[in-house]
Every structure is written in C-alpha cells, then in structure tokens.
Length: 404
Image (cartoon, rainbow, N blue to C red; front, side, top):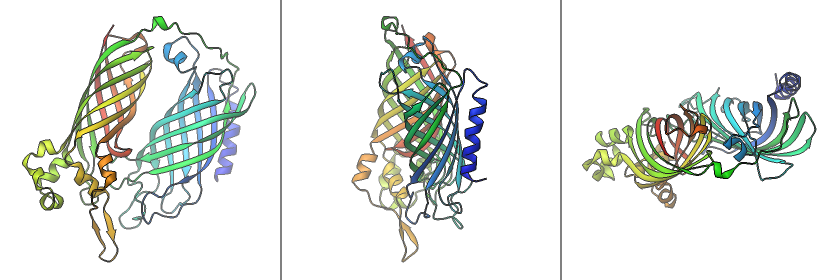
C-alpha cells in the first residue's frame, strides 16, 4: 500500500471514529521534508514523507498546569516516515507521547506548538559490509524527537485544518557506534478532528494560591554508551546530581545544581592503554578514575503535569579530561589512499563542545505533583548530549523534598 492510499484511509478512519468519542481528539498529519546527509558518502535521498496519527485529549480544568499552559492537549503519536532511499536508509515507525500548547494569549489561538519524545524502529541500519554508507542509524530501535508549529488556516465545529512546519530527530543515544543520527525539516498539513465542540474559556488562576515553593532534589542514574568504530562495546555510565530551586504555579520546576558522571568505557580505554593514551595523552594513566569522569554544574527545568513531567537540562562541564580522546575518535577522517581511519585533531568546535552538556527526557512521579507532596520519588528516561550530539542514554531514580 502506498503512502497516498494510507493517508486517505487514515483521514476517513479519523473522521468516523471521531464521531464516537466525546472526550478524545484525533489528528492526521502528512508532511514532506528534507533529511540532511548524516555523514560523508551518505546514500542519496529523495523527498522525506511522513504520516502521523495523533490520539489525544484536550484538557479543561482548574488545575494549575492546565491553566498555565492554556488548556493543552496530551496524547500518543504514531508516526511512519520514509526517507527517500528504501535500499539503504529505509523507513521508521515511531511511538511518542506528545504535548500540544497554544502559543500567545489570544482568543483565536491559531498558532500552537506540538512536541513529542519517544522511540522508533528502523527497518534498515548500518552494516559494515552491505550498508557502510549509512552511519546515521546502527540499531533497530532509537530515540525519536519532534517539534512542530501548527497554524490554523480553516476551522469549524468538528475539523481544524492546519499548516505544519517543524523538525524531527532520530538517534540511538550513543549506545552503539556509529550514531550520526537523522535530522529532518518538514512542512505539510495537519487535520484535527474535534468530536464535540468544547468550552474553551479559561479559568483565571488565583496566583496567590500558588506561591513559589522551594525544593531539594537528588538523582542517580545508570546509562549506556559506546565510544567508536573499534571500541564498540556498550558499557555503563553512572551519574549522580544534586539540585535546589523553586516550583512556580505548581507547574514550572526550575533548579540549579552540580553533577558527577563516571564512564566505564573511558576507564577501560585508559587502563588498556589504547593508542591515543600511549601516544598523545599518557598523563591520563596517572589517575584513571578522575580522568574517566565528568564534573559540572547545570540549570534545569521541568513541566509538571500531575504524575508526569518533561525535563530539559543545560550543563557546563568544569572538567571532562577524557573527552579530548572521545572527540577525536568520533571525528575520525577516512584516508582513501590507504584505506585507514585517522583520528581528527582538536579544533575550535571541540573547545565549545567540550564544555556544553545537556539532557532531555520524561519523568514519572510516584505521587501526584498537583498536591505538592513534601516527599516524592521519580523515575526518568533521558538522552544525554554534548552540545546536541548524543553522549549516552540513561535511566534515573530521583528524590524530591519540598519546603512549604
């Protein structure tokens, strides 16, 4: 079945079932885009085609997060993408929780932001023999992320036709090399079916009811990472962090803190005295534990939605001694004359990338955050990065203490 037939069937499907559900919204979206080549010699790509189905719920209540986000919509997104090269790049199938919020305070609310993070399955990926050109994806399953703007161009009681433009990304979180990732910019149409016209007047929040509260948080995590082509074993990454800050309107959790991270792959590379350690950085052998670690400070923000939360973190590495080797190995240069790979040299981009770290993920709280419990426990899943490039994937356990 080609994509046009699938789009038509999906459109009809959403039209029919939307009549049967009074509390649910259904979206079907079709976009065309361009996927950037992930590496040198990357297979030639035609136009990217993506079909997405959304099953969600529009929220109307006096809860703080609902009012702060202007009656948002949450749900599950099912997405099919074809990258314009079936032989070497193939297609992906994604499942992602999503959040859609209107932008700017206005009665029409024609502009909205839809963002989602989840997982994808790829039917084609890197193979050292048959598919060596595709260094974008090397695992069957990857992280998936998207951010789209929707603009309403026509709407009535049951249907909202919107123009969509945005960006999507796929990466395995550096659990296996290579992991250049796929980045796609797209534009198209989104058809949103509203089964029943719902009251959209917002309830005014009594700001004095939600005075800021202070919190302290400790979090520990375990992740997985591989380094590069010739050292492609997936090994653990251990992290711990401490943060303090404030929660505003029972919705926005803003904190600052410090972190420590230890990389098993870095430690083993040093202890085994691999090439770059012996030749260029023998000083790393003097203190392998310290030199296999990263130390830094960060600022992070969470969007609290009852038991669930979305979290983003921006960090500064005070010290990450081994990263000079990590950077050179991941930026290897292929020499056609000899058929060899040569580690790159450190450049100005390294100086910036060396300092900037980040995390993006989802959390689940054991106790509902709307009640601001004094003690709470959370479980989170994150993709961690160096200036936007995946570093490792992590699961974490956190504890939050609130001072009322």
